Image 1: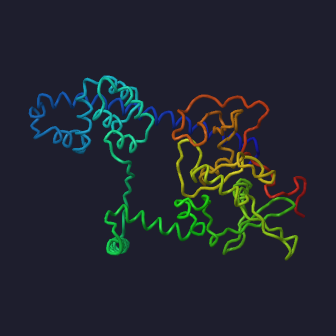
Image 2 (image 1 turned 120 degrees about the vertical axis):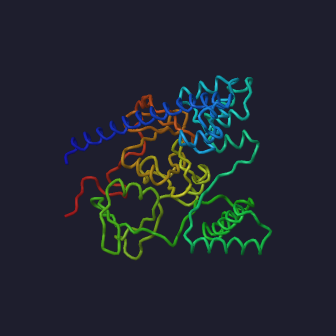
Image 3 (image 1 turned 120 degrees about the horizontal axis):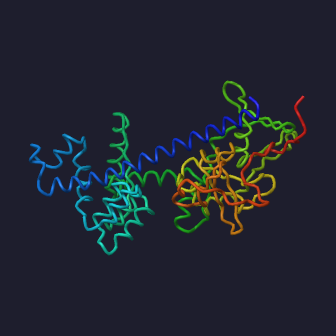
Length: 384
């Protein structure tokens, strides 16, 4: 496939993705607007107990029989519809700005005097954060686990074992305790516990028992990964991604060759701590499967300001050319797609709405592109 054909196919895929995104978000906005209308109608149906005229036993019975709603959804929408003193709330739903779950939390606590502030909170916060703030509770994250029988027996036995050997009782506390203990013993030589006590700097986790071996030709830059079934060739993008943070051994030096790392430990630990070990792409808060990315060619240096933490998927997108990163004069790292859609700044809790263009870059090219030879090969050389 020629370069022109590849570019045309990539453009076609981007265009289709944008079309699907526009249609899907339009559908969601219409659905939210419909929820607002349904909430008002349910409130009227409840006000005069008009569900009796339809031979139902309650409003939730009507919702279950005729709307296919659960009792909780009918009740939630009713609470929204009954707040006829908050027209701003219904207007926000009709515009598609708030889903009914967020609108419910606003309906429970807002007054005509502060409804605008609560609507803004609902737009800015995640649902769990909004719920905790509205109810005056500590933020909790809900996790649902589906166990097989053998897994549940092990889980249940473990819970009872910890309860008998400690003063912990709540299951969430026990699970968190077990993981904290595991992490303290198996990552960074126990540095996690030391950090909490203020005795050591935060360290980026590094599992020395798990490594992927890559062979890179020093002349042409081609690379392969060693597997149980022989070497598997890596694409340039895959090699670039791995080269951001690897150990390098030049076999041409023989036994005297010294293993070096593309990121010094002190720099890695600083970048990891600064970014809180969290992917910096706007709206992405993944902390598992994250890596450190060089904004430009790694062999040009390891300035922390030219590095950041990315999750594996976003890191791959950078090296595939699907995601751009650049720094403005203010030093803030910003993200955008290859077709001119700005996504926001590093660490933003939410992505900005789709739309708008990347600011003019002037003489500064977008960072995170695709260098030809990430491990130092000669650009004009080829393997014989």
